[in-house]
Image 1: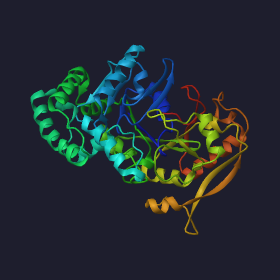
Image 2: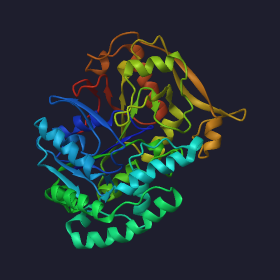
Image 3: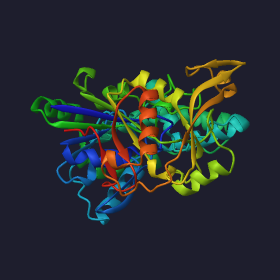
Image 4: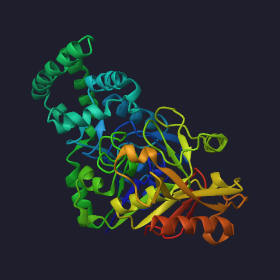
Amino acid sequence: MSVVTVVGAQWGDEGKGKIVDLLAQKAKIAVRFSGGDNAGHTVINQYGEFKLHLIPSGIFSPNVICVIGNGVVINPAVLLDEINQLKQRKVDVSRLFISDRAHLIMPYHTLLDGLEEESRAGQAIGTTRKGIGPAFADKTARLGIRVGDLLDKEAFKERLRHILEYKNIILQKVYEVKPLLLEEVYNQYCQYGDQLNPYIRETNLMLTEAVERGDQVLLEGAQGALLDPDFGTYPYTTSSSPLVGGSCLGAGLGPTKINRAIGVFKAYCTRVGGGPFPTELKDSMGEMIRERAHEYGATTGRPRRCGWFDAVAAHFSTQINGFTGVVITRLDILDTLPELKICVGYELNGKIINYFPSRIADLEKCKPVYEEMPGWLAPTSDIRDYEQLPVKAREYLNKLSELICSPIDYVSVGAERNQTIEINPVA
């Protein structure tokens, strides 16, 4: 039996989709456990290039059952569109199942997300305005509507009526916009329920039985550890936990069931939206990395902020996740650089620190302390054996492993599935 959790270890966009697509070839079940359609996982394989937002990246492996777990918030329109797109490209979606405990994104969530973000003006968080935060807020406030609620239309209507009365007061009195009509929302979501009905299951039972059989289960995270609402750069964070610990809650498995916890790091750093980013490069180097790597959001198309690898943040990520191993992606992007920098400490108020501050005000003041390393100035995208990498590339990776405090299991040297160097692969 093997349960493997794969999470983003920085600010998201580390290349988790490719890694899950790779590991899913050996799995029986792949589970998306957190976030919503604010996450975009790009996968390139024999079917072509895909940008998935809700469906697990394991959907491309023909023998893998794919589960959208209870920890995900689901916009039914987005999910149905994603299902239809996969069908059109001859990808089998009959193996897809949705937890009846997953919460729904409702029209008032997306509406309020945009209105709230606009009201913050210069203090905007930089959300995707897809209703993710308001949906998770309602889940915590016990005002949420779950996927399973769509299966009982009478009970669903009464719950929707109660919640919509409350939401319309906010829309009208606070934001001075038109109220949403009960019948319109109800009828639309009943249609969604009819279309999604074949996919809805008590998925935690499926996972428990799979683990008892000894099947390999792959848990797929969204976003990255530094966007966790408890340990990330709060309030510039996401709304559900993208940590390894969050995979237990978001899938419905106990923590003792996890055998391997794999963190995915880029060989440099990127971030989308607002919030502190100590190693951000606001110069031609940052622009060069962005264009060479095509660092634009898979969900929004927004340009990603680019910077050098932050080992202080990376070590913190290992501490809060307990990685058994890591993946370094996009090493090939650095092939042409004569010199590389790694942040090994921060200067804060005239003192050098080696920890990741919890207070945003402190993190915003931190100046990176860099260690410089020579580049390798040679292509790596065709290499599949670690020992065949240029010496300087191996030295760089060894340094990252030392600073992260975790062994490297895989190195990605390109976007395609086979452009991967396996060092300690999942069995």
